[in-house]
Length: 234
Ligand SMILES: Cc1ncc(COP(=O)(O)O)c(C=O)c1O
Image (cartoon, rainbow, N blue to C red; front, top):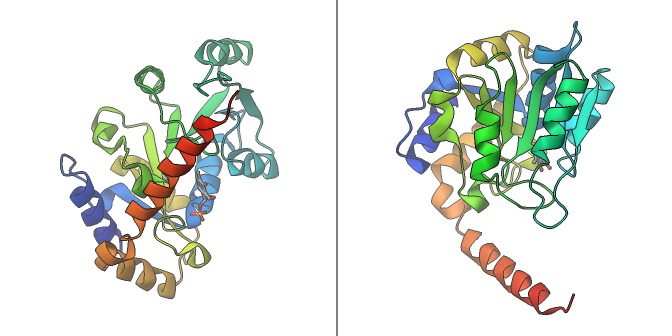
């Protein structure tokens, strides 16, 4: 299954060289988020950094593990992360942050990471994990997978719960440097992904052209909705 995922990534982003050693699979990407929290913040003083509003499970899972959450805001017009506030908070919290979680494009605000935000994420020291959640990759076609080589501390998360419609079968995956993957593999439960779910994920990858054929229609509807909202006077 990891090989099938690696082949899919390489085919959708040809300038990358991803193999099975760059992949870890989870019972949904929610499980991988939990695994990443355990790997980085448990048993120490670690906290995570998020910019709200964003996907709720980062803080829900952190709370259930007793991990402190450092939260910063976003610009009210374009939802860009308040990088200055993030830097201030980092200094105030004595650099306890062990992992940063962002969605690209963000959920629920839909804005993609800007060049400036990406440069900021790229400037984090290598002992801090930068998790870039690409749950909506099939819709956005935006990815930072080409940049993984330069950033051994970046982890990309993807899921089969969105455009690939397998949410109830719970299949997510992480793409990262092999050393990060080895450590995630040490923590995950031995039988975290049922064979049936793996078979289903492989099947939708094999038939991805058919399975994803509805995407242009959805994207067309999104444009229609966007245009209609733009007509509403502010
Ligand atoms: C941004 C984002 N990341 C991760 C997930 C979790 O997906 P999964 O079903 O793979 O656990 C979701 C699902 O809502 C999501 O919106």
